[in-house]
Image (cartoon, rainbow, N blue to C red):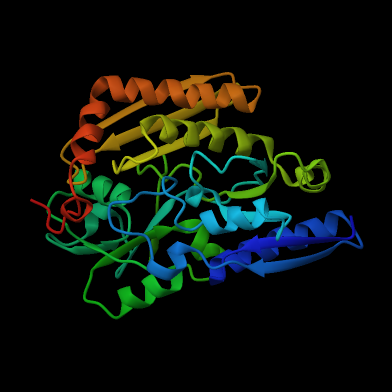
Amino acid sequence: MKAVTIASRGSALAMWQARYIRDALVALHPGLKAQIAIVHTKGDRIGQPVGIEEGQTGFFTREIEQSLLSGRADIAVHSLKDLPTAIAEGLSIAAVPTRHDPADVLISNPAGPIEGLPHGATVLTGSLRRQMQLLHRRGDLNIMHIGGNVDTRLRKFHDSEASAIVLAAAGLERLGLMPPSASRLDPREFLPAPGQGALAVQIRRDDRRMFDLVRPLDDPQSHLATSAERAFLGVLGAGCRAPAGAYATFNSDETLDIIGLVGRPDGKVIVQSRLARNTPDVESAQALGRDLARHVLDEGGREIIQALKTTPPQTQTQRKGT
């Protein structure tokens, strides 16, 4: 294999990710020629609508997957949290490299925790998952929706009168944009999106040559942990708008420990649970995530999701805490 084409979005963060995988492949396979093909997605054209959470719609991935299926590309690189839990037929995730920081960060001036924000402070976010957890901890906050890429959101924040913004740590770190006023939110207490901080290297399922090429990039623990998180989200329903988070890590005894939650956008009702189990392979990790999701649904999550399925997305955004 002397040349491969890597499909990627054209945003600054997506290009960083594609170059990261390209450079890793070239280092592993001297003489390999790897080029990046930019694919424009629906998400790049219209952004991600309010009320649509990570890993559910394919706004930033569908056209990239089509480039793989059509043969225009050999490999696709995704931010794993953007990749739908039900990926396109005929494709597979061949590798999940070592996960970067999965946490969210609160950027404020002065720096400090959520509890240190002024009463009634305005906080910017583009995620109902973050909104739900912010309001659960601080019902007085004024949550305002913000869209755009990482650098765009930061610029909008600095041009606004908002007190804070919540963004993913990994994106900020990859772009060298982490400000000194950022406070890391412990992912065990402020749950990230399933797969947050991880990359997915996707190929055609029957392409054995590409599998052999990219498989050395795989980090088994990152792959298993994110598989459990994505399985958790998948059971909640591919089209549901419910804010949900999940975070899986390995304990000292090598069991996989996963926390998952689902809640109302206003933060007033949250259902959270936790499970741990030995997971020697992807199938068992996915089974763990599914079992946790069923438990959360049985404990009240099902009612939250059913209510939100019948609520227009624009009415789910909580502009003002109470």
